[in-house]
Length: 318
Image (cartoon, rainbow, N blue to C red):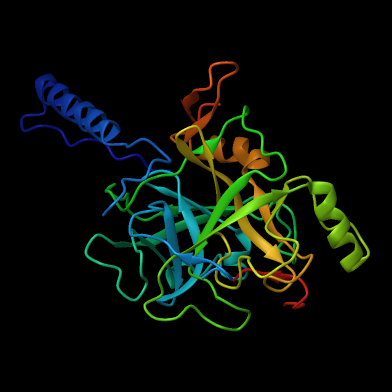
């Protein structure tokens, strides 16, 4: 890593150096002051079986583009960092010039003046991810080439702290621009879709997918959510997008859309990479990430930052 130095003031004396340092300190303070509270949309006034979201409803959801076309979704954590599914970059870690990130868009075919497109500087997959179908640790951090400026349409989401629990039937939401049915792309103007999904008991989900493949498929870092009757689910193109749950007054990123068997099939719910399992890894790299949780007995949110080849039966949500 190369750290640039502030240029010396004309004359090169101590006063010039002190002036430069003061200017640098004031800039850092100003930028810190501009960081908004995570997980709180500033309301402005297809996912299978989903419905149109409203403009600015999910301001942290981003479109990861490949060759100018929507490829995966992701979630904005800070002005520099997006989190998504690692499998979105399979075979392309040395081809990052193909990728960009579109932020602040509601309709992909009509992003609007508030949308921003930024290049990808580098991608850091989880070190234990194996690049196999339905593998554990399907998570990657994306560093933006330039920091973005927050706005009412571009805001960060929170990570859950250690106090957050997601028992079965907890109602959460997913959002994305993926197919509205298996093989049916989202129609014009490609409006961001949203869908409420309940958390499914991990033992139930393990049993369903165990019967499907004859071996353990659901690992400890996976969450299942959706409907056992099918009909509503994430689908192709939704990979990397958020599973979002409300904690007190803030939205936290509970999971990342990872894989499933087909789209919206009976007894085949969506499978998500759990941020409860991978929060510590994210915090080590993205130290400015904001956390939210529940304080014991007080009922109020705890605030903090991050100091703390395909077989179609295993279908990543690309």
